[in-house]
Every structure is written in structure tokens, then in C-alpha cells.
Image (cartoon, rainbow, N blue to C red; front, side, top):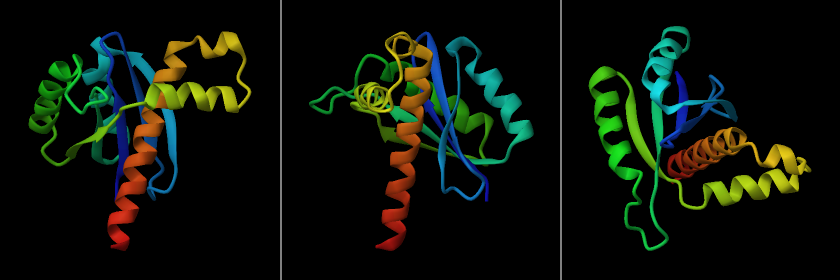
Length: 142
């Protein structure tokens, strides 16, 4: 069983989170420039076994797609074509940035560190991954 990798796509930076091999723990991995995302993924897949790619699905509060969706949908199509052995799924990412900021506040991270957008992106990817993993566990119990 391979890892699950989550992507919090942004037009400038993309946060990456990954599960442990047993799919129990979600952890922030890295924030990379978006232009380097697909090369980074190819290199990572050479080193680590990944079965599922979870892409954050950006939506407005009313459920309609946000502006970023126009980049994510083609990315998903490219990933499905390049990696037919990997499942590519979407997970609602509404409020993940807000939750990431709240998490940083609650954990006592200082004001200067909270301004680090790369850290916010990595935490957001972790929240997406954790939510997806929890949903998977709930569905398995049903």
C-alpha cells in the first residue's frame, strides 16, 4: 500500500503533504514553486510509492468553483495521463487557509512565522490530507 499525497495548489506556491506508509498520519512535506510542481512530483514518485493524489478543490462558500479551479482541473487531467497507476481525487479545501492560520495561532507560532505563506500552504495541504484520510476511514466503517 502506497502513501497518499495531498496538493494545496496555488498560482505561485503549492503546499505538499504526505501520509506515512500505513496511511495513519498526515504530515506537511514541503512548499514548492508551482511552476516546479510536476517535475517535483516525478522525482518524488521515483523515491516513494504513492497510490493516491488528493488535490484540494477550491470553492467559494456557495460551492461554486473559485478562480484557481481552472488550473487544477487540467493539472488533474495531466496527472491522470502521466500516472495511470495513481488515483487522482479532489477534496473540498474551503476554509483550509483559515484553519491553517488558526492552527498556527493555537500552537503558539510567533507572528513572524505566521506570515510565512509557505508554511500556511504546507499546513493547508496537511489539513486537506487529514480530512481526506478521515473521510476514507469513515467510509470504511460504514
